[in-house]
Picture 1: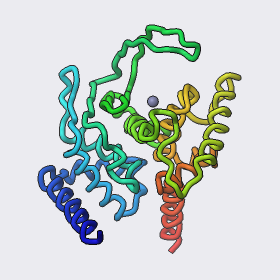
Picture 2 (picture 1 turned 45 degrees about the horizontal axis):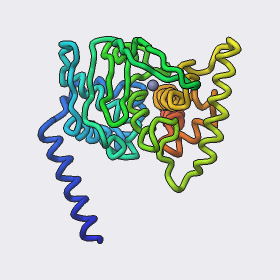
Picture 3 (picture 1 turned 90 degrees about the horizontal axis):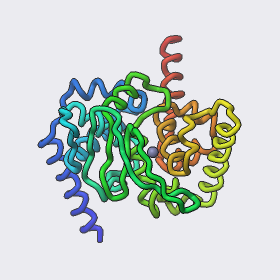
Length: 274
Ligand SMILES: [Zn+2]
């Protein structure tokens, strides 16, 4: 068994080295990505790991531009690096089961028949900035990715949102409950998330300013995707608004982004004083 594990480990290393060799990440692009709020506060070891995961993801998935959009290698890297932030400690297996990442130049229209809670089918036409299909592609709007980069730190990140849906779908479809590890309590997760979700619905229904993007109140699956965006791009804000949700995500993603920021700020103060 140990021998098998060693062989698999060697095979993984070989895959990583081969991915890095085939797709060397341009240093200049990587330097720009390092400044994004979801990446800036990672330790050097975590940044190195993220770089490797991004390289492998670029080889595992097919990134393509839609409607004649010229998707450059730099754009692909920007997408891959941010997509790998949620699975930094979970691993690329969380993104198995699909290969296609399609990118539109801007928000795109989708038309489809959808059934409401009472069973009535409606024909809906909606303008989307991103979409994740179960066992299908992740679809993104480049204009929205650029907007998120400009308004960094505000809790909006379409890439993290759509890839969080992929993680959610690993556990009995899109239901807002990702595969909770055996070491955590699924019941506690459900209680915490249900309570916070109902709170957000209450704020929206009573026309009170919601603490996070009101879009999270549209369904439990959107709530999970929206709080994941905040967790990685505005973690201190989420920690203040929905502290228990923050703690559940911290356990699930094995990351503490608010703690990282606090630690970095503390070091800055110490350095200024010394
Ligand atoms: Zn969504």
